[in-house]
Image 1 (cartoon, one colour):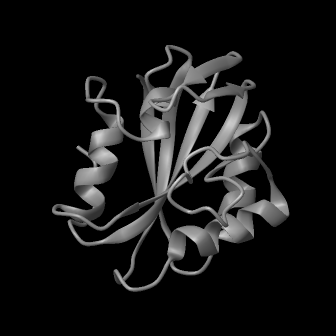
Image 2 (cartoon, helix red, strand yellow; image 1 turned 90 degrees about the horizontal axis):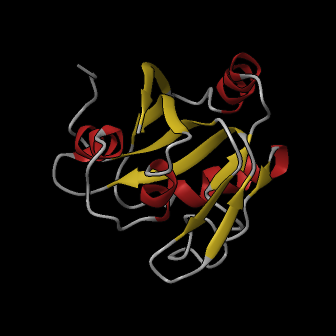
Image 3 (spheres, helix red, strand yellow; image 1 turned 60 degrees about the horizontal axis):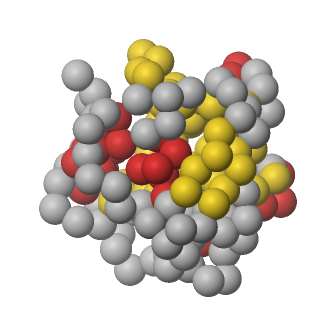
Length: 155
């Protein structure tokens, strides 16, 4: 079982997309997601905190709400791991991370940030090598984030 705190925080899912994916979200917006490794930024501020939110993403069957739900429902995707940090509810760590990621990676414009109009994206392309992506992400997230590797779970 995945060991995560039940406290509020911010997380970055490491998502493998094995083949090009087209994702249509609740608003009928269509996103083209080329194959590769992606970093998805999210927050967990509700009941159950990080543990509840990340486990929701790992579970296969769920109601579709966030953009990431639609991507993870695609048969070519899996979660390789998650970075996380316990943080207070008052600061906007998602936008801070988005700003950092946007300087280093190409984002999928508008994905996952419909509630954060100033953010370019919350989904960033990290290349095709998981090892290289984890190295780059670990370097960027060296400010107190922990990494939990997950067995590749096909969602």
